[in-house]
Amino acid sequence: MDKDLPQRMTPEEFRHWGRRVVDWIADYWASVEEFPVCSRNAPGEVRAQLPPAPPQQGEDFDDFLRDVERIILPGITHWQSPNFFAFFPASVSGPSVLGELLSAGLGIQGMLWATSPACTELETHVLDWMADMIGLPHRFKSSGPGGGVIQDSASSATLCALLAARERAEGMNCRQSGISLPLVAYASREAHSSVEKAVAIAGLGGGRLRLVEVDERLAMRPRALAEAVHRDREAGLHPFFVCATVGTTSSLAVDPVEEVGRVCAAEGLWLHVDAAMAGVAALCPEHEHLRQGLDCADSYCVNPHKWMLTNFDCDCFYVADRAPLVGALTVLPEYLRNAPTESGQVIDYRDWQIPLGRRFRALKLWFVIRYFGVEGLQSLIRKHIALAGEFAQWVAAHPDFELAAPPSLNLVCFRHGDGEEFNRWLLQQVNASGRSYLSHAVLDGKFALRLCIGQANTERSHVEGVWELLKDLAQESCP
Ligand SMILES: *Cc1c(COP(=O)(O)O)cnc(C)c1O
Image 1 (cartoon, rainbow, N blue to C red):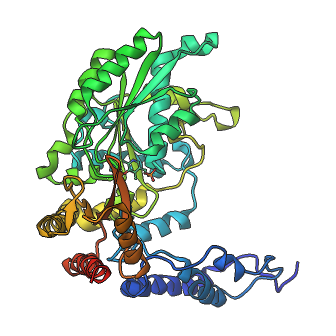
Image 2: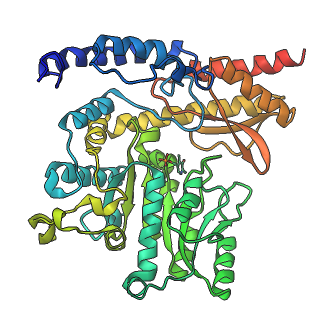
């Protein structure tokens, strides 16, 4: 064995470099506001600076950090900047990142209860906490036939919900006979693209997703849903799955879950509720409308990795009955057989998700909830919603700007009155300035700017900053 070739980083070396990295992150967070929010890199700029071949001999850790600053940082869009208002927040926090670090250090695979009991039990427990925190019905808690699991993303949650729904609709009979039903799924026109993707992955076949009409608030029309279901039944198809959205991606519109649920109950359809971002606001009792109708839902998901200070990935996915989910996803090869599984007394989360392996994600969520407490998290949500409300008022009161949709929670969709081309230009100018980052949506066929507030370090001054910037740019352009 060649003595000079490192075969491990010793615990002492790890201690040294680990401190350096934690210091680096703390310095980054302290100064993140100073970077241009949106990366200015041109395509290929990062790769052009990387050596074509990997090193044959190990290199100094010191050099890695230097290269992170030199090569990587310019290619970073600073999602943790207080001036990041695009898409949705990806807010992280100290306790979350430290929980993630512990998870990486423990380096376990939580596929079965037996492969690390704490990984499964902490996850079940923290998801029960979360269910209570956001006021989900009891049926989603682990004490009954239902329960929660952490998925990597809302997209995976929606796919798992769809597969469970198919299992319930088709069951053993179809599987044994090899005959599948002509299944049809439904979501509103404003639903997230992950529904379409889930339908494609599940192999339902083309034209098996109906995009239901929305009302003037961009929420699903339950009557249009019922009509579509009837039409499909008459055509000999088999409706089975509806995805309602609580907080659509474009405008945070909230589908009327209660009415949609009534249609689902009457027609025997699986109701999945996608509350990826907005669901977190149900932490605050004043937003209880976000949990209306959930008694009728078969599954539900919400992303702490968006608006609850938990770094990606962490989606909380709940089912009211775990049997069809497990039925759809379980395969038990000989090498995974073990006594606890066979006892039926434990949860094996590999049966609740697509992959076999799984990370210990509950640690970071547990740390976040314990560090901030429910009240700390509530106060942050309230602060963001209040700031968005103020911004919406400034927009509404300005002669040249208008709201493009009713402001909802932490999101404001708005536009300048001078038409699409001008608004595109404005967006491009704001983002090129480096001082702020907004995104856009098309609502009712019309282009709109989109400001979403969700970083823990965003203060009123930052929101004022982007508003001043918008007004200045609009002013400059028309002297
Ligand atoms: C962000 C978002 C998604 C996608 O979330 P991922 O966790 O990135 O898959 C899905 N649905 C809604 C409503 C969203 O806001």
